[in-house]
Length: 109
Image (cartoon, rainbow, N blue to C red):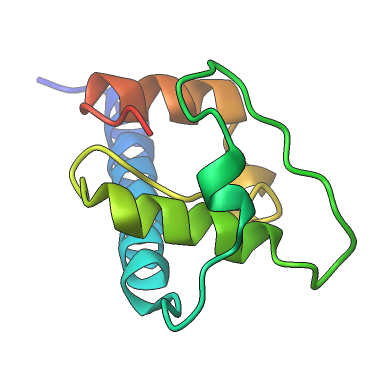
């Protein structure tokens, strides 16, 4: 039988899973809905095989569009995700644990 702490841990786990699914759905929608009537030139210039790529620029300069267009061109919805670090999800969850969980689910981009 479960004690109260086990039930609370299990409830917390299901809340985390639900929130992560919402995070993934938001990513899928953003990737599907990004405009492809034009393409950021840097999509072609970037070496996407690097382990870490820093994207800098002023607000509204196209950083998010660049990343979403790349993920759309990649066409691997079960392996790619776009996450904004200012999402409310990260007020309670750590980036490290989130990326670790997504990696275990097969996400690589």
